[in-house]
Length: 68
Image 1 (tube, rainbow, N blue to C red):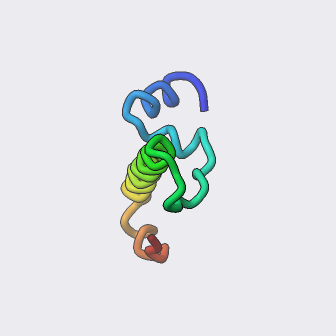
Image 2: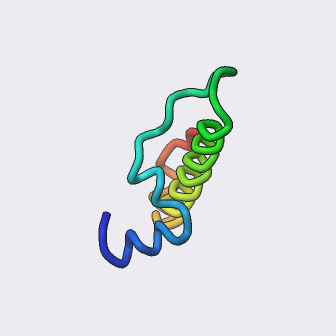
Image 3: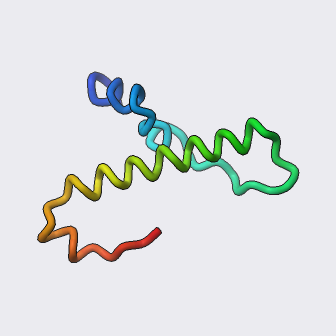
């Protein structure tokens, strides 16, 4: 992603999940920074999925199974 579209995504915080791979699953041995990175990535992913879902026409959206 580059240009105006990426700048907008970066500013709003939902470009992280597109730019970076999902962090490894958390364990009790993870640091506070690793936990914060996972929370930030998950929030970014959720926002991105919501934006994609609402950009699909309702007629098509109903045919796509809902998965979390």
